[in-house]
Structure formats: C-alpha cells, structure tokens
Image 1 (cartoon, helix red, strand yellow):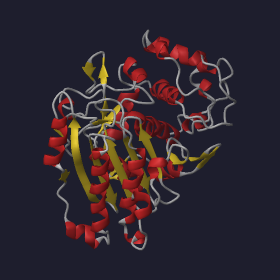
Image 2: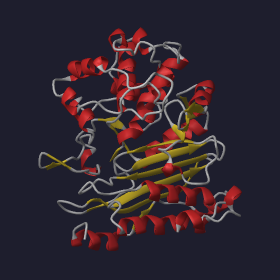
Image 3: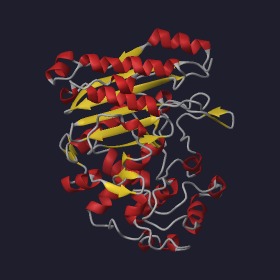
Amino acid sequence: MRFLWQWWVCVVCLGAVPAKLNADDVTELGVSIQRLAAIERVVQQGIDRGEMPGAVVLVKYQGTEIYHRAFGVRQVEPQPEPMTLDTVFDLASLTKPVATASCIHLLLEEGRIGIDDPIAKWIPEFGQNGKSEVTVRHLLVHQGGLIPDNSIADYDSGRDVSFQRIHELPLRSPPGVNFAYSDVGFLVLGELVEKVTGESLNVFAQRRVFTPLKMNDTRYTPGEELVPRTAPTEKREGNWIRGDVHDPRAFLLDGVAGHAGLFSTAADLGRYGQMLVQHGELDGQRVFSTEAVEHIFAPQDVSSGLRSLGWDKDSPYSSNRGDLLSPSAIGHGGFTGTAMWIDPEQELVLVFLSSRLHPDGKGSVNSLIGRVFTLAAAALPAAKETSPSKSVD
C-alpha cells in the first residue's frame, strides 16, 4: 500500500466536502448535475489508485460557481488532515502564466516593453553567447532556444550569481525555431519584470494582479497564517515542505521566481480565470484592457502545436486539457499536481489542485485532470448530446 492505513480510514470517513451550491441555480443554467456528479467518482478513483492523496476541483460557468468540492486529505504524514476548499497549494509552473506572464502583459499594455523587444535591450548581460536576438515573445512561447533548466548548483551562491549564471548560458538552438519548454526562459521574464518596474516580481504581481482581484490567499512565500492550511509536498533535508516552494531553484531564490513559487487556492484561481472570461474585469476592478486579454488568448504557432503568450493551447503539455474545450481555451499545469483551463467561448473556468507529490513523490494526475475537465465541459448545455464516457472510462 502506498499510503498509511490510517490515511485510507480518513478518506473513507471524509469523502468529498462540497461547497454550498444552489442546485436550482445550476439547473437554471441548463447544466447537467448528473455529469457534474460523475467528477466525484473519477477523483475518488484517482485517490484509490494513489495518484494523489486529495484534491480540490472548481468549475465556473457563466460567472456562476457550479462545482466546488474537496476530496480526500491534504496531508498524509505525519498525521492525516482533511482536504478543505480553502487549502493552499504550491502551484509550481502555474506560476508562469498567473504571475509572470500577467506582469509581462501589463508591461506590454502600458507600452513599457514590446512583444518583439530583445531581452538584451533591458538586460544587456543576457545577450552574451548568441542570445542577443531572443525576444519577449520567444520566451513567452518557449521558443527562446534556451535549455529547460540549468544546474541547481548555479543557484547556490545567491540571487545575483544565479542570474549571472543564467546570462552566461549559451543557446541550445536558434531563437524562434524549436519549441522547448524552459524554466530558464521564465526565470528571465521574471527578471525582466523586476528590471523594468524596479519592484520585485512578487510585489508587482501582488499590487497589480492579486490584490485588485481580491485573491487574498495568493502570494509567493505564504506567511504563517496560511501555512496551517497549505498542502505539503515532499521532504527536504528530513523535514516536510509546507509553505515553502517545492521547486529547488525557486527555493534557492528565496521562494520568488518567474517559473515557480506562487501559492493559491481554487477559489482565487477561479477569480483570476473569471476575470479573463470577462475581458479583463471582475467586480468592477479592471486588471487588463480588452485588447490585452485578446493578446493573451491569441494562438501562437510553435514547432510542436499551439501556445498563447504565456499559456498552453494544444501542445505536448496539454494532456490535462480534456476533450471538449473550444479552440479559444488556454491553460497550464504545474509539477505539483495543479492545472487550470479557461475557455472564453464557453465562459468556462476549470481548476484542479492537488499535491500529488505528497508524501513520496510518486503521484501522477495529468490524465485524471483531463478526464475531470472533460466531464465538466460535458455538463454544459451545448454538450448535452455528447457522451464523455470514452474519455472517462
């Protein structure tokens, strides 16, 4: 058995924890409650198979929260803790679009940078070793010609030396030619935000994105008040990682980096996604202009499918997309077991958060997330004649 016997007992006792949803509101929207209910079976099967100890799933349709449930436990060891709707998760690479790309789009909207500006215009040191023509666009779509990750040892001597090592890296391929998913590229984009704004990435993102959207549980380096409801990941040097970022490079950068480090809840991400569905505005607060949102959703051809500027669309990394989203949808996943997709055409926001690395680093959720998101989209009125059984079973 992968997890402790006591955890299995905890799961059996807890089951799924629902939010207070009004069934009448859901049915008035023409949504199939039966198909939404099937999500519970699929998630529970994943828990039973040891793919993750628990999860939180949120679905918003036409601005209404039609599904929000917590499953299983957020902590297995040292003692089981129930999963709650407000559990805070290490988002891992969901940091890239939600934090870093958001900041880049704000700078683009304000004309402070250009999408095809060379990075070296703002960070001259980056231009060495053949990188002088790498642009903002190249990095947003992972076609900068950079390696996926450089050595963890490059981050051992502090933030300044870490970025010096990144600046010294050679190109792996010419920019704009090959798609190669790169943490390094988003580390550089985070550095770009700091160079242009004069603020740290976390401060700028908090001030311009998370605070206006009332994403009150979203931040880098969560404080003591959030740690008790944060889902742990693995152990580092014998201690459970809880409230510290799992990614080793982000950890060595004091938890603030362009590629990883953000923590959030399903509800907060639902607010972010709804803002994009509503063309950049939520509850009277405008974060992006309509034109900026159009740029965010616009498809970008890459050598291995389609991306958008900071997000995925249809690439080797979009197996968690499901089968029923429109071509306009954008999304992203995170190594820790997180994903969200936003479909403006269907006015649909999908969030799946888990800590699949807890306790032993062996969980796997991408396929499961795809099935959950297929069921959610299948519950919409436009999909009522579509059977999701092929994707779920």
